[in-house]
Figure: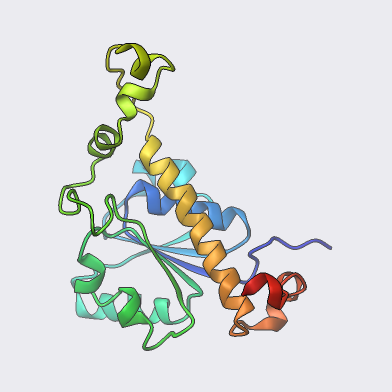
Length: 203
């Protein structure tokens, strides 16, 4: 009987931005148990069904002390946290990698900011269009756009968030794989992966 690659892995999704939610969905597709924290009042009918796939949803107000404690308790039981709360917010809520490592030292914490912390744009609001404009997406959609100075072409496709979500899912998986190679995993649950985890591959 076959098992999903990430069966038994617990993932906690923080933040309602498309990139982080896509990453969590991709991990759910691989068999992970995904719990996604969302703000109170968000209705399923208002959601993209794609982003809800394979997840459990919990509505918590991270500004509320009791709800914040509940979120930290979920993080303490997680193998992977996907943080898409936005710059500085995870730290403010005590849900950043440093804070969570106290109660969960083997946690794989993946942050998905719009712009890197060292970027001149780090403090800019990372709307989809802002990221597209910064990365030159609107001039590169057509093969000859850059070469011949073609007109700017705008797209409603969330390309930046899509790529960010895919890379976040890959980062989370590889981080978790490194954790297994470090011998810190519950090996009985993941024997299928440990078979390929040779010292020469993990160094």
